[in-house]
Image (cartoon, rainbow, N blue to C red; front, side):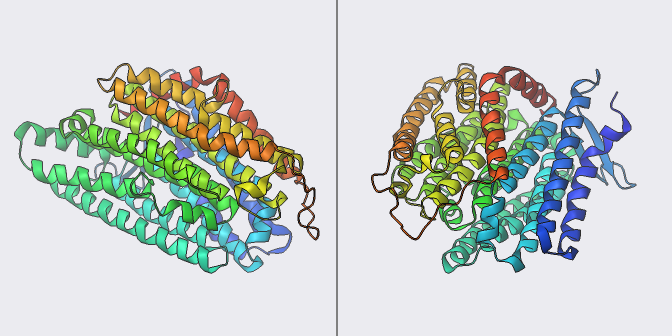
Length: 504
């Protein structure tokens, strides 16, 4: 049986982060106390998430529970829901957020003016709280509220860095995100009008009645289309992803790591919960929405890599790679099987660990090259910052699916899941093609970084800063996670599958 402390962890985690966001602006700026507090709080929440995961997997009873908010039970009150999948994602999100902050601690001081660093900490705490709320909530309106909090905070951490290009990218991000949010809001209104509920399980039961009576099918179809489009925009699913590279290319290294590794995953997991807890697998298949997201996923896998091939800016190249990796997740969802959803969730976890490492490594290499972001400017930077070079190489090998690296595990699980689907040939063709395209832009980047620069000091007035202890530690943990997920993914995939079965 789940003990009372573990039972309250979802609420405690979100509440702690919200309180930290309120307290941070009141703290003195000296010694970067607000940033350190944010890291400590996120670290504590990560430990709590690990304990929740341990409690759920060793309870011997139900693998999931509902936590009622306030004094009003369902269907009037709000609910949080925790199972193994939610606990894993919460843990991964917190660890990746913490490593993104600590790995870019020194670059944040350079990129963000001192008077904005407290604001940055507020935004980071709000982002983390919104990610956990989206992970745990069992209420669709609460999900929408935290989608909006997530949107505002994500756009603001892009704009926190000074510069006209940054503001332009942030505004473009905000406009696209608000379009997505508007579509989601209209869909939720339609669903509430159809079902009379906001809790996901109650909505699901009402939708089953609609399917039996065949009434109100058109509004139901419209709601599915709107909510899919809205969250696809916010998840940077191709062709809705053109705002993403500019946002990454002009923001701080920490912001890029957080946006790609975490923010997108929060919206994707929201899609998973809505598809499979509100509508159900049968409805998604009946309305052919699984086919739609499969096609969009395959398109993203190919076109994201095609656009990455054209980039000279290393951060924009990695950003377009994220678009391709989002396609992998939607391919798994489009298979519309438990194995496909589990493989998609595994890819969410792996991408949430690897992509922040890539952006952190790219930031370190860029600093070693005199703050230049062009690929050719990074020539020989491996020998200036070994940790950043190792991070880029390991991340590139992972994205290419080289055995023993994390990306191989998720690609293999997607391949195995495809054998249970009638779309097997299309799925395998997309996986092979995308992997080849991944290699076409990651291999040259690795070669450039490892190639000795004949001109040892192209900028005579520039001295590359040595990586800090925090940077080395963060990169070491990133690398360890990469190999751990690549070599020991089977127990994790089993646990994810159990969580998906409970989720559905």
